[in-house]
Image (cartoon, rainbow, N blue to C red; front, side, top):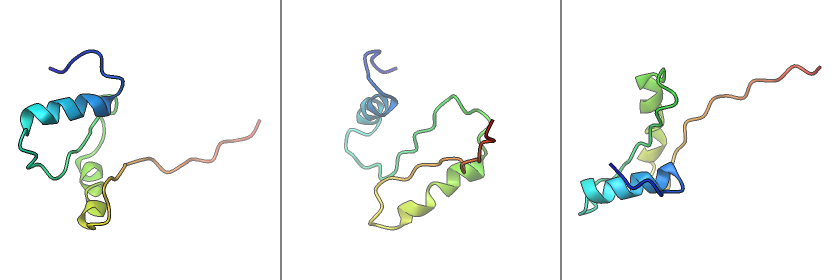
Length: 71
C-alpha cells in the first residue's frame, strides 16, 4: 500500500517502485489504471513497442478520436 496523500497515480507508482525496486534495476514500468478493466492484453503489449527505441522515454495508450455529431 502507498500513502494516501499522493496528488497523482504517477506519484503513487513512484513510491511503490521505490519499495519494490530500490536498486533501480527495472527498466520499464507499465501504469495500468483500474478504471478500464476491459483493456485487452494486446493493447497493453502494443504500448511497449515504441520503448524499443532508445530515444523514447514514455509511451501512452490512447483511443483514436471519434468525430462528434454536431447538433
